[in-house]
Image (tube, rainbow, N blue to C red):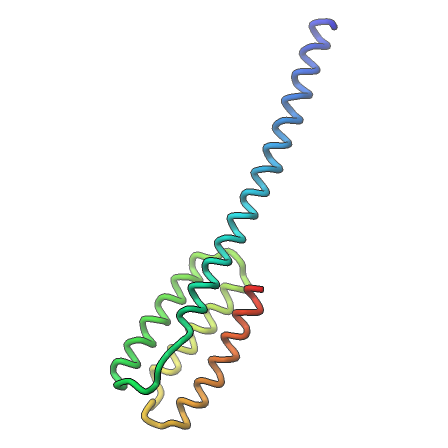
Length: 126
């Protein structure tokens, strides 16, 4: 093989190797995004509980904390559907902070709305 042929073969091998690295890098990035999405979804679904039978001040403080944590998660996830679902859940916790939670009917309506938000998050995470 001539010197030019060896150089061409080395360049072709390097190009093949680099394209393989690019594919591996792309797969790793995709795997990282998937792991990020799964972790975010698991954490968000773990935040979904809120006990209306506690002291109203404690209830509102917990709702405020959950809202803040959901917004943080939304800020860190790349998947737009998951982000939108997280922000919807966070908005739901803002709504409940403004409600009179002493009224069982208000709490029941909020729970129904929040179940729909949780279902939207599950769908986005699936």
